[in-house]
Length: 456
Ligand code: 5AD
Ligand code: SF4
Image (tube, rainbow, N blue to C red; front, side, top):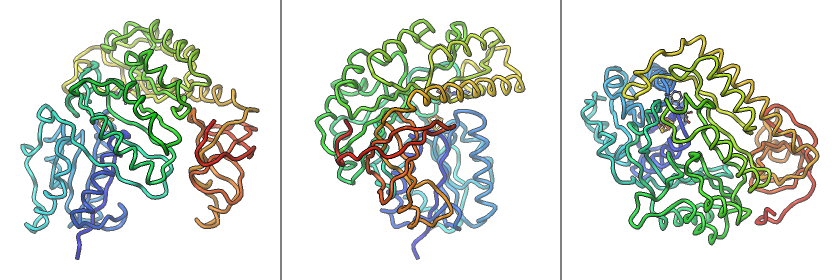
């Protein structure tokens, strides 16, 4: 009997990408993939450690799985395993630990452990430190059934060391997938029938600086323009300092590049930005926002904010609220500052008490919702292209849902639209006349159909 394996992923899009690649590798090594809730012989947890909450969620998920399946072998990999191997090795539930390096070797390790019979604890010394992880570990793209959007990881690691951030320790230095490999995978994605692709990375804006000869993201996007078949191309997070005129020019030059950028601000107070070791101040950030909005029509800019950074007082926080409102983000991700061992900010004082962080987080999230509503409302009465992703779940079974009239999809600027269209299919593109705005989505009616290819 072939062994079964189930996966659980926490954290960012890059982690999800890596899990998919690992699934492919496990399949190749003869494992059968099963749902996480089915009893499996092996459980793989791909963990995150960006906040203490991420650590806790990882530990909880591991314990729960082992309680339900005491005889299963548990492998824990990823950022948390890289940064705090001792914490995880101390859990009796954990059998194999592997950090963020050499992950494609995991199925082999698991096989050997299974063959040896007893799930046995591996030592934290078996963790490969991030600093040894210097080359880009190519983790092949895998097709996922029933999706219209594909993710492709083209860059890993970060050298920036913002004072709050554990990621450079978790993932090591900046590395990039060579352009020829990026184009190879994009061709595979197009051939597999995907309409949309998201290029992801940890510090994506510095794509290529480590390559010989050096590359940059704008040049890569120029190359991608020559590729037929993919209708929409999105970029994951970009640091404000990395958005060059050349990049904006290339984004404008082809309708397939989506007018949505995620640009983490983190704080709207210059004193706090300095303490965070962020390489810009509010004035530069607002120039950037103005410039981008002038250059790219209907651009959506989303952002990340950390509340309760050490030393953040009420005045700093109010500055951030005002500045965030002025920037008019289309969506906000709010994080409560979490001290990470080994980062500079963890040593700073005073740390903000938890109830205060909670209060600020609630206030910032309320502003985020208001800004999303304002951004969405701008499009009521307009006609937008919507790429259908899934039928809106209801009482009906899967087959009924597919025929059913209401579908959900995304516009190029990342607005969710619900749309009535009978006999439609996943991955089709419709023109939607937007009628109303609700929390989290717009309601539209069908205004016309495109050919499969053209967005404009
Ligand atoms: N505490 C809270 N949020 C953090 N982030 C990164 N490090 C921390 C931390 N120590 C947030 C940042 C980043 C996002 C991915 O996670 O906002 O952009
Ligand atoms: Fe979490 Fe950061 Fe690692 Fe992604 S890179 S999994 S966000 S710690």
